[in-house]
Amino acid sequence: MAGRTGLTSSQRGTIAEVYLAATLISASDGRLSPFTPVADDHGIDLVVMDKETGRCVPVQVKAWLGQAGRTVQFDVRRATFRPDAGGALVALLLDPATMRLDAAWMIPMDKIPGVSTGHAEKYALTPNPSAGSRDRYAEFRHADPASLAAALIGLSGG
Image 1 (spheres, rainbow, N blue to C red):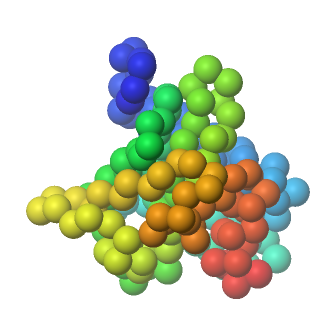
Image 2 (image 1 turned 45 degrees about the horizontal axis):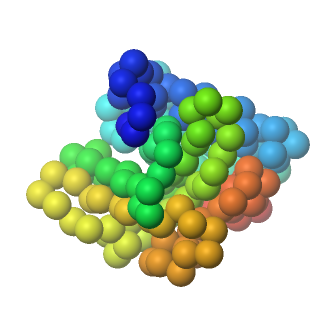
């Protein structure tokens, strides 16, 4: 995390999960209902139910809190990665001082291997946070909560 040293990775993860849950509820006008698993031992941080379709989408949440340079990096551990789960990775770039969403990427899990750099123990995703970027992550980029919520609704079949 750039610029700050006081928060642990666990605290940053909790902040991101709570932020995303609240944002999805608000941006979907209550249509999306996020739940947290009792045990986080398989890479799922939230299960998001679309109340209109009744379908649930498993979501892994990653966050970068702080100033971003030309790219940020989000890592997905191979040990917990499941491309067949019908879920998504939601990666957030948040300003820690204001908790403003600077950018977000929602990438269906089955697309992760194709857009990431594979390493022995992880998939590394390095999107450019610039709004005008045309990198391989551009199609997954969302500039605001409403767009992110709509993408998750689309993934749920809504």
